[in-house]
Amino acid sequence: MGSWNFLTNHFLALAHISQRSDSTGREIAAAIGITERAVRNIVADLQASGYVDLERVDRRNQYRVNSERRIGLHGDRDAPTIGDLLGLLGS
Image (spheres, rainbow, N blue to C red):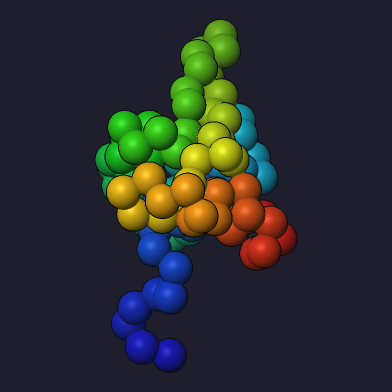
């Protein structure tokens, strides 16, 4: 296989978070094979775009995937949701 992945690190992080919402940055990084710093940047991107919400619980972060968030460009109402995509992939 080539040196690229079919799914982006953003999607892989989102899929991991959807299955294990209490994962640490270190756990997410290990699961998808990137650095913790990259995970922090990706989670910040996902939060800023409305795909993930973050809640602090004690000393840990608890994530919630916004499964109703559409993935289409420019708010396309016919675009599938994140929940639709994760459901297709069994995440």
